[in-house]
Length: 515
Ligand SMILES: *Cc1c(COP(=O)(O)O)cnc(C)c1O
Image 1 (cartoon, helix red, strand yellow):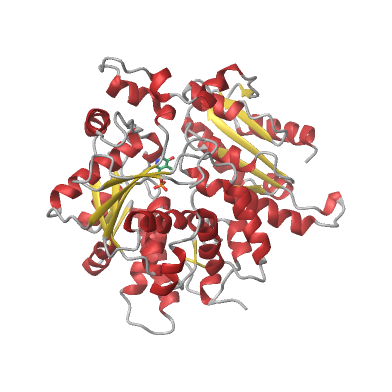
Image 2 (cartoon, helix red, strand yellow):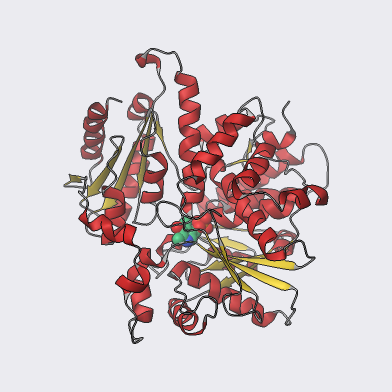
């Protein structure tokens, strides 16, 4: 049996066409350029919430995912095994542990640490699962087939440093999948390069391209657009628009909510350092499923398209990306925001059977305008709808640094807690929201921590090197990351940012990989 929340459609489609979970995951992006969504969000009763509050992270993930994946597509036993395997690589038994009352019990700030996966960043929570899922679907398809009939996936991506390693660690050692990550030579930090290039698995290849990040991204786009290359190698992506990533991230909203409220009737606001809107969108799903979240606060850096939209109703692309201290949030367009816009558009229509199709038409129009005019303007009712669930705050580089200093000096539990710059954007926003709220002792703030501070040494040292006794090596750098500098690096140097050189490099390596 398939329930309505286990069927997917495109945010830009005005047809009745739908996709299965497997199709939505393997396809990634819809052919009309839209993103896949389950148009029906399943509702969880208060009684079920109570039962869920006692579950482990893994069991909770299984329950949530089961609502969005038909049993016929992935049998329960298989889904359980996929979830368990995905989170067995985490260093914390809670997977996403919570640091309660960071600044004492007056402010009720709780830090949700999402960085205990293999690459020390929040994307692991989703990509460890997505990697296993890709392998599962491919293995099932390829079972019993001759090698020439097997489906093989070649994942190609570009990174400015932060996100490539999470993709590599999600896909390393997976059968019938290869992964190629392009990065600009000399323009990523040593730790980032070490994380990506010291992975020994045969199916992983980093390509150090003598050029800029934009060059790398353009080459990847051109490869996706290259029909011959694409059909020959089944080129795939693991970018943040894949539905399975959003799905995997819903779990920690429930899990941390249960830990903070502990069965009591208390209110919770989540504050989320946001770029492509994938992390906080999972919070929106949790809220719509019935988790009584008071508000979801979008924290942006100076790349503030979301903050401007919520305040003005105009979604407008800036001319250039600002290079900030929180680079994983440096974006022009928030790709996953389109999914929220679809739900807001539908909410704003009077209820009738064709609303899903009409919402698709509206979203399609908006994104057509964005493409042709660089912006679109929505009805004030759409903003009013968004404001029921969301608030937003924009945080500058100076505030990011002063927040890292402030928490280092004033945290109570534990003392001298060190924030990474992305998390600091969230904590700064949290403090502002607390100041705006009248001191309500029953109001809790869960501030999401998206990276370990060791990954962003420059910003952390900039904030803390003035303090006597502070040492990056001693206070920040985990032994496991320190060890990376002693391991052998595997990278292929591409001397010019040229698509033909990159394609040749990929084909050469695929032969060596036997793929
Ligand atoms: C990707 C990322 C973010 C932003 O998450 P979105 O889902 O793109 O909003 C924030 N912090 C870090 C460290 C990240 O890697």
